[in-house]
Length: 511
Image 1 (cartoon, rainbow, N blue to C red):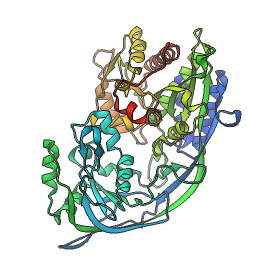
Image 2 (tube, rainbow, N blue to C red; image 1 turned 30 degrees about the vertical axis):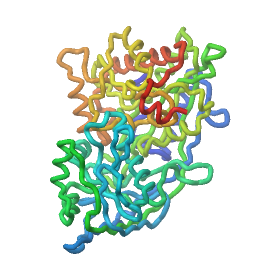
Image 3 (tube, rainbow, N blue to C red; image 1 turned 180 degrees about the vertical axis):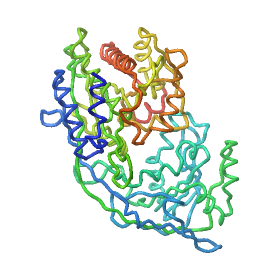
């Protein structure tokens, strides 16, 4: 069954399932029919399976961006795509700023970690320059929260900045090369829209945000009293960074075209069997969207997203089937939610978590499935976020009878804890994990870590993430069975999941 779901969802017919597209709507209809077939109850809007998500999209007018640096040595105009990248604005058609530059380290304020990049800095009416990422000393997942672009933008705006320039570090450039960002310049930026027609999580005073290449970052600091190489040395040594005025200014400008559209989450339910506990809900989520079709790209221009995340949605559907046809009934109700807009900034999950179709306080946990690599005979799994709540115990109990193990985050520098849909549930105070296949295989000579490395370097967010990948459908069936076991473990536990005592995310977001 998983092969059948994948074969449809990753077909060229759906043109990459871009959020708001006809191809995505076809995919959503397919998931709806599967939920119907397996007897799930509709839990979307108005008695149906679909929850409508109102959206606003923006595209940068590619000829419009301007970035000039001015200092004692004169004015230098940087080149779009070679020196910098920027995106469209969701709030205005014309965006512009001209102001002095202030270096604010990483642009992070974290009281618990005693890190205050804005302490003593006056950035009101100025453009802040910040390093990508976070100090290596930060705890992995807590650091991922503070280093997220949304957190940095919100903080800069709160301090009165009118623009932001992000410069790479050697580590961030290795993790996500600037050259790769250029490949996504034609893909629109989106946000969900609230009942008043306002795009969510936007900073009206901070619509001018640019990211520099490594050579352009050196150009910026060449006219400053601070030197970038010295800053990088301090970063490597984990020593305090200088902060302050850079003795130069910048002028930014761009144009955007905006439009309103809509997409849908698909929500189905297996009702719990316990008269009391059935009013509590365990949410299993997987994003249904991918990057779509880039018509400006020559050759194969459809981003099918077979592994990212048709594999997760196929697992979601198969897990629902196991419940609908199984003999053991969950005591708590289980929601299966295929969400839209993950590739556009976790939009569908954020919308559902902010506007749930069941009572918000009745959601007790989220397990998110995003890009499980189903090409090898995995014998361990990764569960980002498991260290923060009692869900780790639920997971370990589900793993044990399957002879599977849990491994820690193998890529702490990538901040994956904040980069998938489960994090939107975390922000609503709900214990959550992001589950994927691990690094080892039951098969001798089969290296799961190398397969992950190959996929991420060659196929991730590329048209080659398609049905030609060497899927291992026995492993896929095992992953679905594991998700069934996890769901049953959480749904039938005497106590609902809780945050660990003193946990940062529990303390920050618990409601």
